Every structure is written in C-alpha cells, then in structure tokens.
Picture 1 (tube, rainbow, N blue to C red):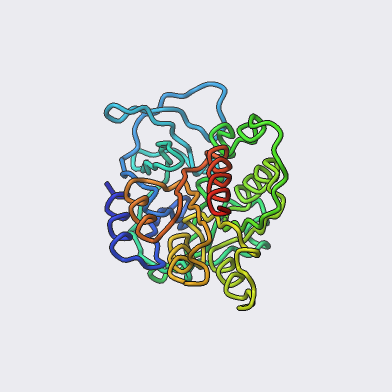
Picture 2 (cartoon, rainbow, N blue to C red; picture 1 turned 45 degrees about the horizontal axis):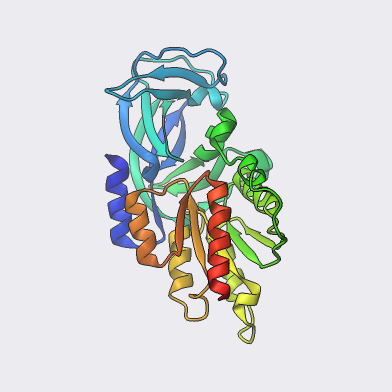
Length: 306
C-alpha cells in the first residue's frame, strides 16, 4: 500500500520532508500527502445515496469494504463529465476510508515542508480556503488540498465535536500556557474553541511548527521556560515545519525537553506511532477525538506538576 511505503521512508529519514502525490482536475495540478493514500483504483460504478452533500457521489464496494465516493471536481466547482478513465484515490485519515474522484494521477514528489508556502489570501479565498499550501514539485506548481477541511464540510459529524467537551460538565479554570501548532484554519478554530470550552484559557495558536519553534527559541534564557509553555500540542502535516520535526527539536533540546508534548493528528497509524515514540512525544492522539485530548492534557499537566 502506498501509505505504508511512504511511512517507512519517513521513519527511516527522520527529516522535515513530505511525499506529495500529484493529480489533476480540469487540467490543474493538485497534491495530497502520500501518507493519507491507501491505493489508486480505476473509477467504478457508484451507487447514489440520498440526503447527502452535493459533492458526495455515493458509495462503491471494492472487495469487502464499502467506501464513500467524493466527486472532487464537483466539490471544487470544476465543470467536468465523469469518464471511464477517471481515478479513485482511496484515502485513510481520521480513522475513515474515503474515495476521491480525480481525472488523472501523476508522479510522487518528495520535497521539504519548507518548500510549501501558505497560499496568498488574494488567490486562496482567505481563511476559508481549501488549499493548505502551494508547493514547487519537480518544476510544477502544485496546490496541496486540505482534505481534512473537505471532509469536515461534507460530513460535519466526522470532525471535532464540541459536545464531547460539553459532556464533561463544569471544569476549573486553567491558566497554564498551552501552545498549539495547527495549519488548518478551520481545525485551529475548532481546537481553540473546544479547549476554551474546557476552560483552558491561556492558548497560544501557531499556524505551523516553524512559527511555534521560533517563538519557543526566542524565549529569554533567564526565564523558567515552563512558566511560559506548560504543554505543546502539534499536528503532523504543516507547511514550513511538520510536527515530527518540531517534536525532535523540542525533545533534543535540554531547555525544552521536559515540556509535555502531544501529537494530535489525522495520520496516527502504527508506523507513525513508532516514529512519534522515537522522537520523544509524550502522547499521540488521533483527530477528531477532542474529549480524549482534554483528558490527556489534564493527566499530563497533573503528572508534570508533581
């Protein structure tokens, strides 16, 4: 499987790199992290389902698994007709398997996260953009899509649920500084709102690992660093610096290594858990389990205070 092969490569390298699978829709190049990809299939007949999002094409059953098919051209507003040569990209993230219809699949490019830039708001649609980054891959300009945002819009019940925090009931106010690195504007807002609902009121939100690391490195040497940063939460996929690279930098640094660090990502697989443990992450949790995240934060902060 493509995602397992990619994970093994990333485990071996330990670098701030990503493998991007390029695909086309309406002649335009887009990209997806290979770590999200399970396999590539030729498109097949799809059974329509009632009362779904307009971009949900229906379901199909390759082998023994029923998969939801998302018509990505339709979601992106591209006028196109379905063809026999279309491709289904089968993905696995957030503990879900989903098929995305695209027109063609191109090669895989391995690049550094530093080569991925956030799109300019004038061309990306601002905060609501479905593009998580723009990358130069083998001479091609590629739009990296925010697949987590796409699924959250199509099926809101599958993403972070504030109700998980509300069900915990009244909680004591916690003013310990919590630093969060998350590049998705939508998910950053959801995480921030949920943690504030859990009465974590001192949040510092960063759009990628690089900006969090720069802020951490800028703290005065004379400071008691844990008064400034009580706990770090990081996504894995982020432009400029991914969560694994951030984890390595934090845990290899004598000044910062005692700060509890949680990896909170849609990509937590067994291979990724091994990588996270090797790098020193204190916990690794799968999105969208926000209630579990709050529980683990409580435990780590309590244990660290002893």
